[in-house]
Image 1 (cartoon, helix red, strand yellow):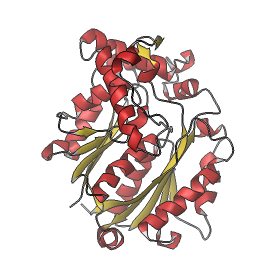
Image 2 (tube, helix red, strand yellow):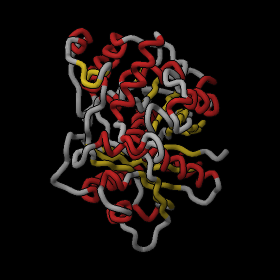
Image 3 (cartoon, one colour):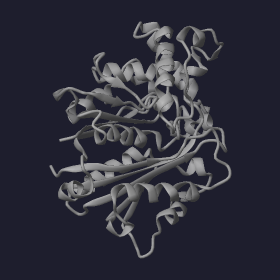
Image 4 (cartoon, helix red, strand yellow):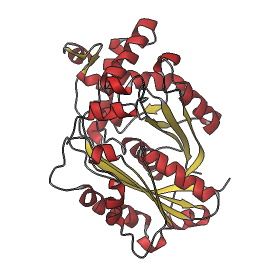
Length: 351
């Protein structure tokens, strides 16, 4: 396998609504920041790959418009995934393994504020049975939480503890949308939002974007003092039909983690893309994390959830801790689809 590392990362200060600028204007300063962080100009970038959704932008081929943020002239090599930017990173990593490129820039963005994000995400469902019912994303997550509670996999108290812990951790994250000190008992006193979920169990509606730069081999060593090397990466998908899945487990995460080698060494920190509190508990179980592992020190998606960028941000946050010497081995995770349908797991190391 060819050595590939994350060498730069930039993200927006995530907000409930960014209405005064468009997606191109949101991305342009981030692209410059990420390139400066890598110490390169755009002429050193061999490949650009992005993650976004036309359903959020409300227009077809909206990703073509956002290429203006990078500048497609002279002609560039680029690609796009209609998924979270974490999967764009995976595509770039595969291209690097083929030996075709040395430096890749990945960006992702999403504005959830203009539309009804719960109904928009229902378009991820199968088009024959669930899609026509417009089952929204929070209701499906509530169904998953109910399954877990009735199976005894976790409790509402544990879910509230997750929300309280992430908001405390997000106090040190200047990019987080939600943060603060609140105890679990106070959260549990609130009314149910979509039973059994309360609002603290759900992610905030967020507009935001992120950019990551990858480099291979000696190029990464030249550009970054302590690259965050990708030592394992894998993604798996579970069936569309919710009725054939055990919603209290994340089998695809378990399989991806095994293929990526999560259990082959001590994990210092993990950044989980868990938009709902009970999903973090399911993912921690799937990754077999012990209590010594620091989980979501950024606050995670419960404190800022820009759709299509939240997964890529987990990679940037995990890599940042390796660059700063706060971790030697980190795990980044991204999810997509209803009830943790698709999961991508990556192991990052400082050496």
